[in-house]
Image: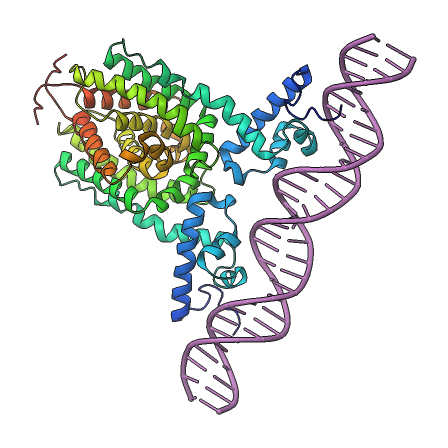
Length: 217
Length: 217
DNA sequence: GTAATGTTTTACCAACCGGTCAAATTATCA
DNA sequence: TGATAATTTGACCGGTTGGTAAAACATTAC
């Protein structure tokens, strides 16, 4: 046979596994920094260290590469939110959600930027995922937050906007990294950066959502 | 003469003003939704309702268009931060900064996305502006916040990360609009959306930064 | 070993892209 | 009005891009 071309056959050879891995790694690198339309197959092939036709042997089109990448990454990207536990202590849960999201921004910035590029450009390839699985998950967790509010565990607030705020503040450090570095200067943009961010964000959200006594101005 | 080609002559005719305006409006639309590399001159020409060569008569290159756009928009984009007043009441200042940023996200989403695209893709065209004017302005305002902290007007916190948090949470509603809509569903994503966001963010930041008494629970 | 299958390369194509050119058209103003 | 300058257009160009065809090469199964 001459056309296994990306998962058409059920059986995957060792080489298929390896090369597809290599390609997706390269595709992540390129798509994350240039967006879908701004990326070229040649670029990806170059990063992956193989020829363009070879790459197209494993993924028939640029879209197929992008799709495979999204499918692989989306699920794990939502893991932190899934861990959000209704039974846990609200303050601790929110704190550790922020932690986890911030760690992902630090450890997987390319994944963050892959989605950021996609969403920024009106999510042409993942709109269904946003309206389906993502919305479902968020609805579910919003309900959890709502029960916490009703139980007086955290301040009255809109759970959706709370989730948006956590997403945006944490992902900011991955998506807008260049700007953060530019503003902080090389001195403050080193290792301590994430610790500083974590400290600030935890304070902001914990105090911001605390059910507290009267402010002393 | 046959080559006024975009501001080479000092005198601008009425037609020049009008057409350049038209082009930049179209360029904003296109660059904001596709990023620089993802946009084509034909697309911009199409949106502007003129032919490609005609467009290139006013701006010699795609880069020149982008540059002109950035130059025009960057300054006004930073206005809200400039208004940040050292003499004002800290809480009121922060509250109205959030307001203004949120209004800009609502009223000028394309401008927000223009920069988001640019920064997300490592700011190849505006890195100097980030390291120069932007950093300078932020440094200045960070100093203001620091004096407020020292005066005990707001809680102890890192002023830079505070600014990043305000940027990210507010711009999120412009840059990730599709995602926000997808999650909220068509019902909650109408007019009240910005009011809800404003209410939440003001609460978050004001409580989060308040110097308050002991939390109950 | 050899035949069948799986992988890689070379050469290529049509569409698109950024940009040029010269001619045609339109606006300006003496 | 007509001369002159400003604007617009259509035809075009070289390079890039997504993708293909087919043959060469490698691997595996028997």
